Image (cartoon, rainbow, N blue to C red; front, side, top):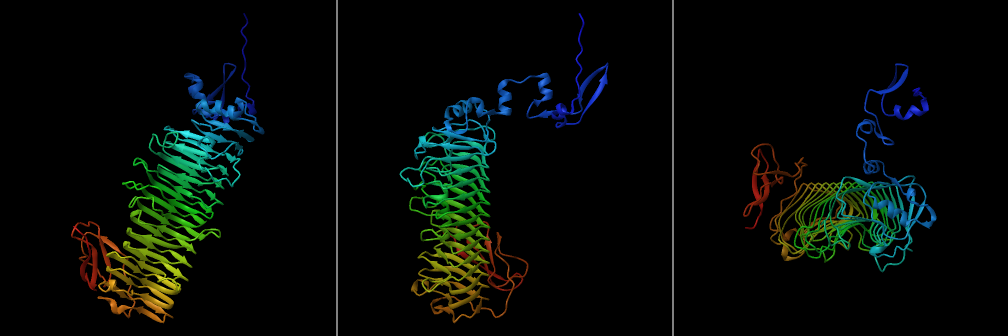
Length: 564
């Protein structure tokens, strides 16, 4: 028998796949050519060459790495054929599914178990999107594996844009899932939410109790009936770099809607660098239905550019008192939408927020702030135009470094209005500019244990500071000094009703911002009116200390006695 020897030719075109991996070379030996590698070769089209040579993989492993093409299951993508069955068969295998460019007609809800990746932004058109649970497009249930993605798809429905009887025909639903990324998609006109993220179960009442580690990145979501994104029960959600728009004022662009069960939560939410427009609220929290625990916690709105009714709202009687805490609103730009219903505000936060609200370095054109019954509020370095700031009974509010333009009209009590009937500490209004305002600061109808108005600039056509008209403020301990008044006919009104008032200093003194310690200062130069907050407060102790006489370290007294 004559043994035939086959020689491997080094065709450059055929060898390109190997050249993409790592350096290769051909070595002559015994008249035969051999392919040798100096490093392990891997390519997604063929897999791990070393593994293939020694331990061949199963078909399941190969499919899990490479995924499937929905057209291999008979999908046409011609905009006419119902491709629902092809998608169902492909998705049932549970490996990544690739969807080539085309238009795919879907008439039933699909239940992915793994990634769905579009190639060329294919359009998936949901017929019979009737606003019911059965009218949804993609519903991912209780996925608890490694990272998967829904990406590169254009999702569209046949909702006519006017029916409003139902609201559950979402484009993408995640129920009790973790480690899911939705990115680079277009979601357009669904009779519900663009994306709904909730707990498990067929009606979001089952387990797991919340979805976790969900990313919604770089999508365009528009003209959905309820919200572009709705959060029902979540932990660690990242909504970033999306373009979000609505034309119906219902719910919110981003709605946070925890239900009645105590096991649900909305925590660690980061909403950042989004562009949003619509007559609705941008981000609204509501419907905790009086649950006894803190349900909304650690919510961040950062660097968003928004044109809406409100940037952030925690309103409505159905939210339990004290169910929200730790809200961070920073570096956002806000304008009032031309079709927004009144009232319009930059932020509107009721007593549902227990404590710790930080509103810092934002720009608002036409939308003011309302905060009510909250402990520890910091509003700093914001620019507010054509609007007012209203404080209802907030304890320990620090209002510092802000610029308010064209506020405090004659129909209001001031560009900064302080209302309520509670015995509160603060506000501390320091180093702000009231520019071209009718009235600056207005206090009304309550006693203040301790407040400081310091280093502010007032350019007001009527009144700079109105200290209140009723006997309720006769025992207030308010310190005013080093404020600057320009073109202001009445600097301070009703000061005769105050028990304590410190005269304005004639000289300008550079003062420290608020600092924190567990005791009064023992060194350094301090000026009268500077404040140190107590980092270890306790019953019958003080909120902090105030310097009553300048020096090194000066004389200090406690303020804000804490009840037993």
